[in-house]
Structure formats: structure tokens, C-alpha cells
Image (cartoon, rainbow, N blue to C red):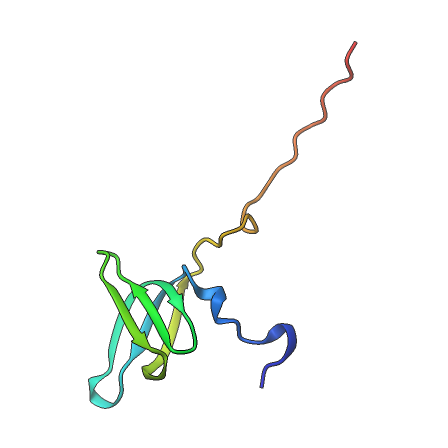
Length: 89
């Protein structure tokens, strides 16, 4: 069981490129796209051509992370400081 800061936080995977395997038995399906919404009941997957799938969480067997995608903040940006300006004369 996970606890504290290592707990599973599904919101971190929103806007990530994933492959979702869902369904049961011999009817299992797999789709690849961007995970655009995720809560305790539904997952919304937007495929490359704009098709949107609404998948019940209970039917998902596996989500494979392909690319983390961009988060809404600048935490993935590398910033380089500039040299200080020379003193004014």
C-alpha cells in the first residue's frame, strides 16, 4: 500500500500520451492517445485524429505511459541566468 508523498496521484498523468488497455475477456481493446480527463469513474482519451473516447475506470486493465506531456507549469523548463550587466560609468 502506498502512503504519503509516494501515493498514486492520477492527475499527474492528464495530458500525457498513453496506451490504454481496457475491456475484459476475449473482447479486450487497446487505444493510444492523450489522456485528457481522469477521475474516479471515467477516463477520457483523445486520439490523434481528435476522436474522444470515454472509458469507465472499472474496465481499464492497464495504462502505459508513453510520454509525460507538458504540465501547466514551468517545472520542465530549463532556465539559464544571464550575466550581470557591467556597472554604469
